[in-house]
Length: 289
Image (cartoon, rainbow, N blue to C red; front, side, top):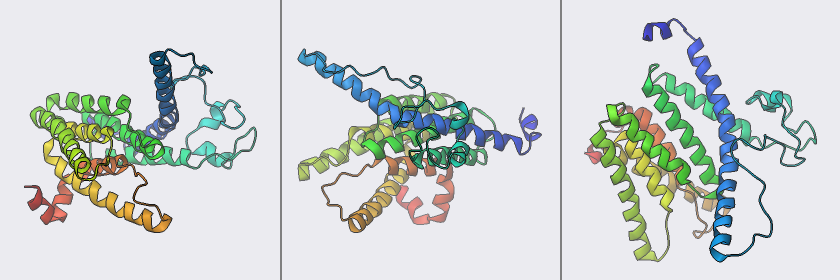
């Protein structure tokens, strides 16, 4: 089976890149629409609990409908205008109908997703492990961008990510099942404990429950042994970025900063390069032990 893939040569990584670009295009839809869908559901539930009529019914919205359209003029986006990255370049970053500027973030998400997917090819042979790694990576991209935009890590993504990690590790794909289960429990409890300790000391909330669930999901994929590295790496990078933002943008300490992107980045790096990192930083290996 692997010999057949070897004969494809450069075609396989090219296919993975194209798949990643297309998935990145879909992730843009998820990133934009999922929070809106959740907000609409919350509003409906609040109105139902309060027994009041909604002033305005939201238009039906899900990940499939309505079709992609310009948010400015509502013109439908034709198939040739929806080619990942390429369409943005051909259109000059503007809507073909109203010439309104298109955020460069859309092709950036597509490109990053494509490159991250391609990077997996050099770490995993064509196998269920590669498929799982792609699902893991794509979910982290969506979670990162949603947290940046809304400071929200939806259960719709974190919980399936956790269960997928346990599912793939039923056969020990990335780690043993026992380590994965312990990793999920420990991941949740670590940040839950930090949250309550911080709240008892300061009376403030230092992070959201979505962060607990994300670290639990990372533990389910990589086992409890990886949690020390993920927490340390995400905390250090988050602290440096937070201080930099306060200095450069003069943001106060009271302005909340999403922690999910740092967890996701640290988790992805650990997923691929845990052993090289431990060899490169012996002190980290000693500390983890």
